Image (tube, rainbow, N blue to C red; front, top):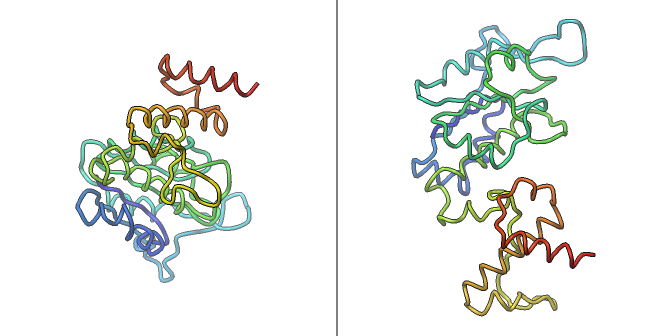
Length: 244
């Protein structure tokens, strides 16, 4: 898979993705990741990527031409490609969206800055707009890195453990169960006995119930989107009864 990020700050993004899981995936050839600066596609003396806003307003707006040129330079002839503008007006990014985007051959992520970008970029160039939440950020770089990290984890072979992604919070629309490491007792807090007895069937059952309990307590809204088995429904009924 190839991911291209169009950003005025390529050094920021490159530094982040040189390490950890993404860095290893790139080194192994599982992920082709590149960052392109739209300033490289400006031809005036000062390499201006922004200009004043029609109709007035404070701040400057990124121009359409450098962004179009940058996308045209990195666009590949592949069967499945998606151009995404990172902006607050878009669909909220979710784990389900990460799984969907991981099926594409190429993603091109557009990062705005200043007061935003010329609307024609979002209207015509981008296939869709994605938001990472209802809050304002300085630019699209952090959202683009968030999307890249989440999507990359869905690529086969990127995670060391085959079940790693499936166990993560939100992968199955449930929060992940609590996890512990040594020592068995720390400052009076003990690891649940069931996790230390080696009975994997009981461990799996405990983890499922703990995952359901944690989701019910912290993010009950997620349960509306879960594919719950009759056993899960029974556990939830017990948990809800215990809360009364």
